[in-house]
Length: 120
Ligand code: AMP
Ligand code: ZN
Image 1 (cartoon, rainbow, N blue to C red):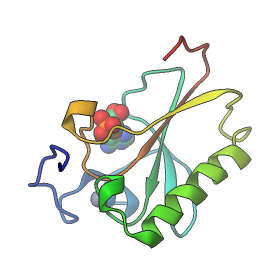
Image 2: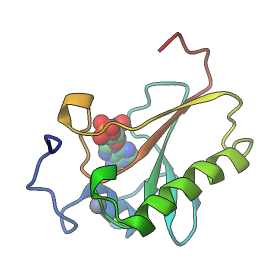
Image 3: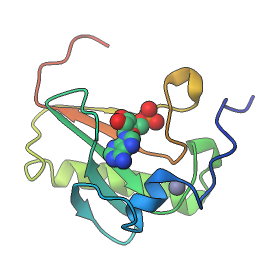
Image 4: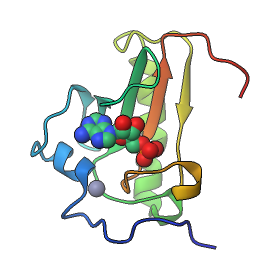
């Protein structure tokens, strides 16, 4: 079964595509050709970042092989620059679909840190 998503969001009106293109301001902490790491506008932890692939897809089900490889590289990069991001232990979250809390229809990984997390 497909995720419940907002189908009116396209690559042309996607907020994260606009951030990637520099059309909407964001605090950029890292970028390379394939992805960016920015500060979340409404942090839910002392440190709350978003890792965002530059090419637009909504959930992992929609990712092609190349895009799925970018996500793997993105997770590895988070681990190698964690000091730069002030992270020690951290939690990664991906909301996939409305029922899971996804509100921006461009795949992203939440990076949460700076506190002791409870059991999940
Ligand atoms: P999700 O609910 O998993 O789709 O996460 C979307 C996240 O994007 C939320 O944590 C928002 O606070 C964050 N967000 C929305 N708009 C912006 C923005 N312009 N800059 C940075 N973060 C944003
Ligand atoms: Zn997008």
